[in-house]
Amino acid sequence: MDRFDAMRAFVRVVDTRGFTKAAEALNLNTGTVSRMVQILEEQTNVRLLNRTTRSVSPTPEGQTYYEACVRVLEQVDSMNEEAMSAAQSPEGRIKVGMPAIFARGLVIPALPSLLDAYPGLDIELAYRMSSSVSPRRPWTAPSGLDPSANRVWWRKRLRECLMHCARHRLT
Image 1 (spheres, one colour):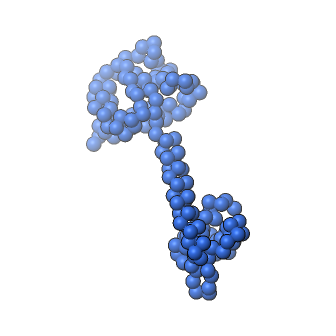
Image 2 (image 1 turned 90 degrees about the vertical axis):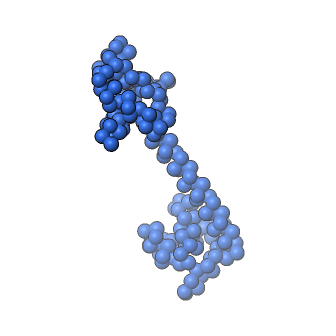
Image 3 (image 1 turned 45 degrees about the horizontal axis):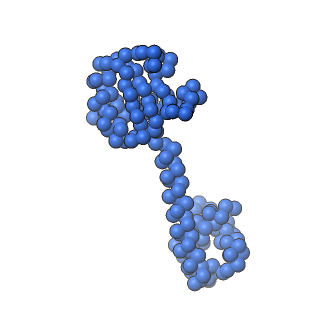
């Protein structure tokens, strides 16, 4: 059992004032939720909940623990969201070669909204293929990264950029 899962179960029990509703909300069975709370009580060596046949309420110590759990879980969720958004936001230098008519008609008009959406990108357009932009290597990686090792990642980023440009052009 993960301690954070047990804390989430405890918080849900307090919020819903019952094990059954908490278990339903967490897609767990009632016995599992009850056991998770029992383990928390054993670990803290404190009775966290007053249990009756009709209701569940936090003890004074349980209320304090509940408030701390809410803060900790919010912070953990926030950290997870930040990590996921950082991993999903493309950044770095992209050098793209294309025909000038394609660049002027489709890509350049969409660049402001693309750069607003992805401020970590540094895009360099080459209007014709040169030695630095060849058909086999139409983009460069951020400094310190080997483009050949990140080929799939870069192709996906380029595809996203071009799709963004195409959507901008169609709207």
